[in-house]
Image (tube, rainbow, N blue to C red; front, side, top):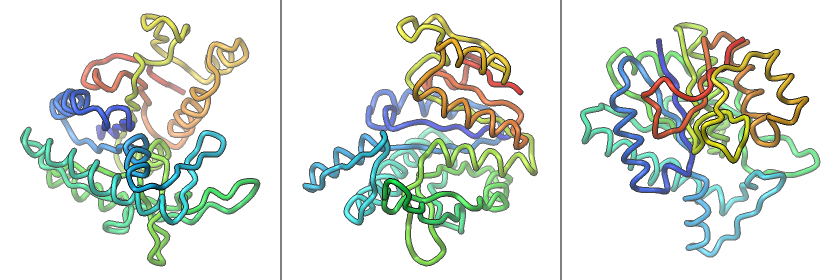
Length: 254
């Protein structure tokens, strides 16, 4: 089974946590793919350059200046830092953006109420490229960048990339999606880390939403998880990124 694993910028910006995560990641047996974020790091670098980060509805607006920043930070600093650390741990990792090898083709998000700028909505994932690397025992490390096929790099949400990569691979190989973040899993009580819900089905998801147990940012995360399962992904696990090698967190099942 191929494991598609996603981590966010909260891990990447913390040197200690990143090292702990990569040690756990390196111990995971079998074929694997890592997708990383880096939004907080990009915000810091934008400030250093005197660029103001603009947000709308909780999402980053990617103007020309911010596109330069995210390309440098995601595709360069964050990605190569991960690759170098994994090489030191005996993992033959290869850093990629969506433009490399035509890995992730996208189009610029259409302007509706808000112009998000150079943000990409994914059209296609080159799963053949990923499978060819995996078969050579090379671990793909994917930055959250896509391209439009006309010479433009596009900023693309890391959760979305993880979801689409898992769905594309699942058409050819058994695939599991693992979403690592700062919590222990999906919680009944956000203030109590031990209140992890071990398994969630579509029926239970509806019940928990109606009761307000699951709300806000967790709703789109779980909606995407069920979308992946309906597209053929075997299972989705949401867990603490620092416990990625353990059988912990919340398992999402159809």
